[in-house]
Image (tube, rainbow, N blue to C red; front, side):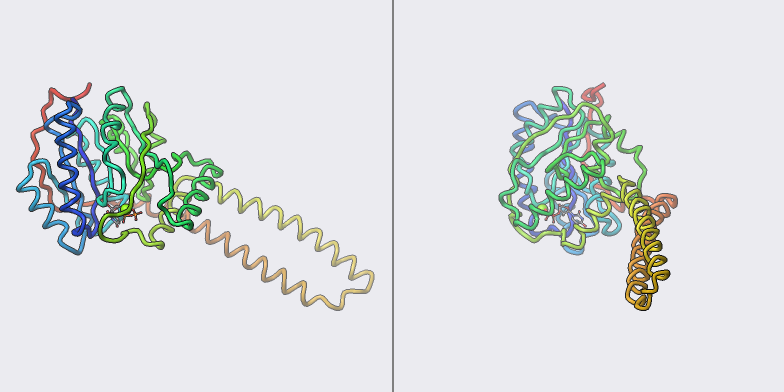
Amino acid sequence: MPVVYFVVPCYNEEEVLPETIKRLTIKLFKLIESGRASKQSRMLFVDDGSKDKTWELIEQFGKENKFVGGIKLSRNRGHQNALLAGLMTARGKCDCAISLDADLQDDIEVLDQFIDKYNEGCEVVYGVRSSRDKDTAFKRGTAQGYYKFMAMLGVDIVYNHADYRLMGSRALDALAEYKEVNLFLRGIVPLIGFRSDYVYYERSERFAGESKYPLSKMLKFAADGITSFSVKPLKIISNIGIIICFLSIIFFIYSLVSFFTGSSVAGWASQMCSIWFLGGLQMLSIGIVGTYVGKIYSEVKARPRFIIEKTVINEDYGKENKKN
Ligand code: UDP
Ligand code: MG
């Protein structure tokens, strides 16, 4: 029986946490009773620098409920970093870790299937949303467009998969080897490889509180996904550059012809157009190149991606349970 860790990033989640812990505890009991998970399985809550009572709640529940563990990050580092902190803490203590959101939007009834697939030998199991009916038309449209765009840029991500995912200990060890600072886990995990499978589920609405992912964070996340995984935007720019150069040669010939045929009086408009157009294009290019340079900068500095301030885990992880 595998030791399973649920890794749950939490940012200002005091409204949902008591209910989430209750539901996950019941689920974990069922998994243990049905012989799917070992008694050493745990829930690991990662407090991502919350400003509310999230950490106090984790500590308090940790005292009453031996299945509840937690780590507190020194400040808010964002969902992906919090998740990584949790996964890296679980690594070495468990046979597999399942990441899920604190609001339980991801259906926990399919956890059995995750573990079954793991027992069948899968090292990574992706939770995939079977439909997006509950999303607003805007979110559905943008999300789907984004997946298609990523595929076009040659980035291998699983369609309609967020961060509801099981990773075995070998996958976690491999993940630890990825040192990048601009984290986009859905892009990294498929790169790791190993045998993988999918579990399909319906995503429900948040049962309390509000989304911690405003549009601004979502856009940043989407841009990170592209610039951390694809250099095609750079190629597109050089292609545009080539095309513009070619067009300007044609334009140059055209203006020479107009000059010699004596019809070159009104040159102001075309000049202004080209100055503005090329100026804009250059700025856009420099901006995109700058994005990459910025990334190189932060990768080269190799800052730690998280710093754990406190840890409470009631741990009695038996070595005999470890998968080879
Ligand atoms: N989250 C986090 N740090 C952040 C933002 C969000 O750890 O800076 C967590 C949050 O507590 C939740 C998960 O990430 O468990 C997903 O966030 P949310 O449910 O608000 O996003 P949505 O489902 O609306 O996309
Ligand atoms: Mg949510």
